[in-house]
Image (cartoon, rainbow, N blue to C red):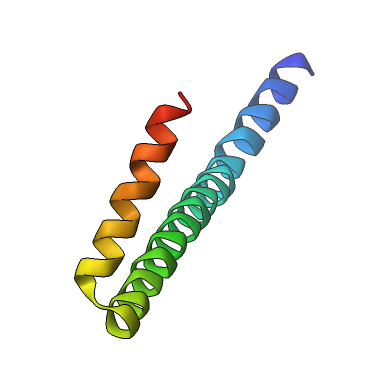
Length: 73
């Protein structure tokens, strides 16, 4: 009887492995998708500001913000 239990538990574990892999893969995909959506949102926000105010003005303000954040560290 104990040998039967080992075979059954091995089979259950082996059949659950693809499901665990799919869940792990989906989780990684969601993490990457969220990251790249945030990056894209920032990129297109900067592009919109550059069209509205000019690239030089946006770069100047970005440099000022970067300097201010360095001063607070």
